[in-house]
Length: 123
Length: 111
Image (cartoon, rainbow over all chains, first blue to last red; front, side, top):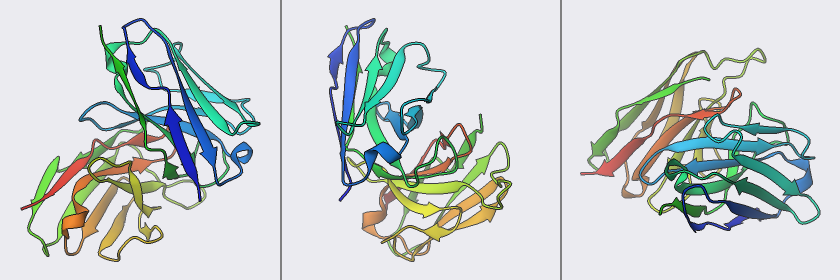
């Protein structure tokens, strides 16, 4: 059974940093690109970042480019999102998501989502 | 980036009655491989989104047949033939021609 379990969320002050983790199981993690999607409270879904299966390629939405860094450790089946220079508008539930096929950014859907971890940026 | 526009913003439906949600994309979602990369998700209250429909009209595993998707190019529709109480939540369309984008969501509630 595929499982994605996020952790690392919490309350952080504006300008601060936080690292999210996503522990994956039930599939060959090292074969799949992985993604982060976020949802601000009461708002819709926003595609944030992606990383290729070997970590060699990354994608960032303009809203987080230069502030967030996605990475992965295939030996630990874990995906990360390092967030820095956090702003109030980064407050959201962050979901780790798996594409249905092991391709790089395009032409897939997300078949599994984690339960999400809440990041609150506030003083 | 492709902009996805959903209407209506919200829908209040009597159980057993049909419901319809529209999703329009700013560019055609028809790929050169002949497939159209449009999907529908439902996010039930307090849950993560779950896939309902992939590639316009294909129901995902376990999705009841009261859900159907249709459309082409830039105009798409999700229909629920007979709404049930368990169908409440927010419905999102999504396209996956890079970069992936979501519609703003349509909240469905029961009258």
